Image 1 (cartoon, rainbow, N blue to C red):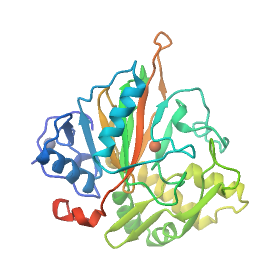
Image 2: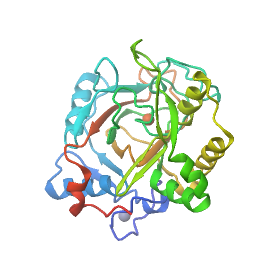
Image 3: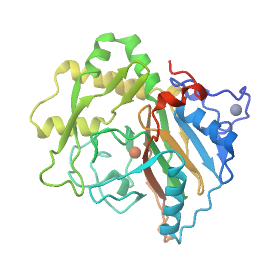
Image 4: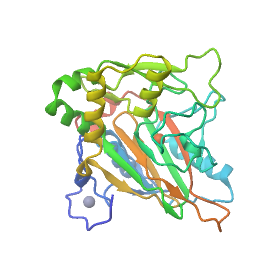
Length: 311
Ligand SMILES: [Fe+2]
Ligand SMILES: [Zn+2]
């Protein structure tokens, strides 16, 4: 979402969008004061490209509890808030707490460190891929920015639908394999001992109008190692193809969230990443955002008359 003059016709991009389709002005909606029409427009973006940006939220970096309540109130406009951990926490404060996941070093290392508590690079993924708590996917991720990093911390967004279309065209065999089951490691802070440390499912679930991605190669590789069930060469080739498509610059929309901006993503259809970041040693507060997950109140199909048809 690099700034550029708005020359688009104000239309809502298709679900399988490319970076050039996401107009940095048209995806932006001022909060508060969402009237019915604006609210409808936000839904058109969420149900179409799966991306919308709310701006002007009154965040306060000295009052995380109050800002957390604000994030929950905003999220409540879009669905039921979902727990993010076994302790039923409804908000996650995303900031560097010095944890090292191993992803940055290309390792499959950590069983407990959370990427939300690290300053490392995070590869393209969707939050529900490992199915942390519920076996059901979430629908939306909300990220409310409170403080920026001194450097880095840029967010990349990619349409998983566009990735799917590219894979289908390039190599139908890999597309078929990615619709079969893969293991996803879900271990992390607080996983109860009686819970399995992995879940299983397809990377792409394409069922008529319904599309759900599970993208997290780190978690797939970790599970394959832990289960002592190495991925076969065809699975590996399919994941490599997916990685190479995910890495295409023309598919990647970039944004660095500013304080008071709130990114809304459809977690079933859009994957996100962030670059490594560094906080100023002089500042007491580093990069900080609040994350909330929601599930729709009503099935997506009921909203279709307002939404861009799903291709
Ligand atoms: Fe994430
Ligand atoms: Zn525009």
